Length: 127
Image 1 (cartoon, rainbow, N blue to C red):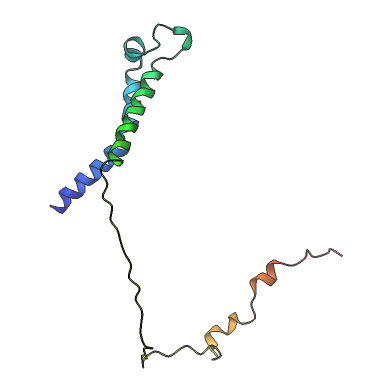
Image 2 (tube, rainbow, N blue to C red):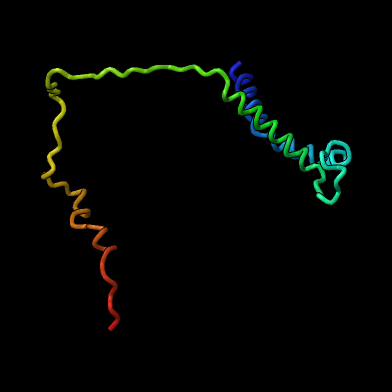
C-alpha cells in the first residue's frame, strides 16, 4: 500500500511540474493548425505571430489555475508559546564544565596557529 501511495504522489508531483512543458510541446507539434485556426492574429501575417498569442494564453491559464489552487481556503493556526522558566538551579552531578586551561597533547599542533595572520599582511617586497 505504501508503494502505491508513493507512486501516486510521485506521479502527481511530476504532472504538476510538467504542465507547462506539455503545453509547449503540444504547441510545437500543432503549430501549423494553431497558426491557421486558433491564432488571434491570423488575419495579420505581418505580425508573424504564428500562434504565439495562443501559447501565451494557454500558459497564463495554466499558471492562473495553479495559483488558484494555492490561494484556496487556508487554515490559520494560532500558536502560543509559553515561557518555560526553571525556578531553581539544577545540579547535575555527572556534568562538569570543561577546564579550558587543561593541557591536551592531541591539540598541541593547533596552539599558536592564527590563520588571519597568514592571510592579512602587507605584500612582500622583492629585493
